[in-house]
Length: 142
Image (cartoon, rainbow, N blue to C red; front, top):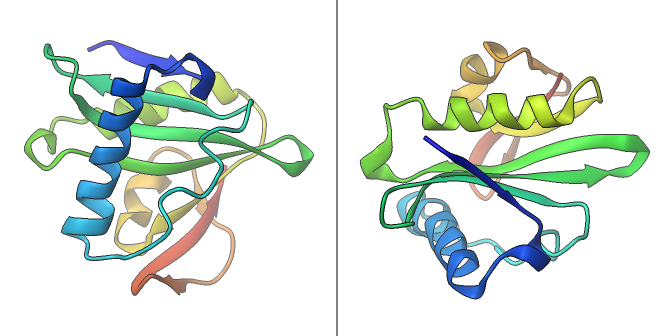
């Protein structure tokens, strides 16, 4: 599998559309969460979009790396297409993202049922669980 990485400015409109469609299909439709998908962070110059595509260039898994204040990296929007789950794609993407981040502090807000998954990648809970869009989340840090 090839892991693609682009800044927003380097994404063509068709690819960006496919990435956002995957995010909306899972987070908004499947998980029934109405939330502002377009939060302005996709277009920040330091944001990196990482994804794995199939042979028709449709994204199977995706995440983004954001630059938070103080040199902290933030991983977010980790998602895998329903038909591609169980193949370890998100784990591959996360390992690739962590390689890119290196020794910098990295944070994420995990859906709480996935805390164990992120712990296996070296993250630990960093604050109490909270509810966002009706789903329990746990802040984590590595």
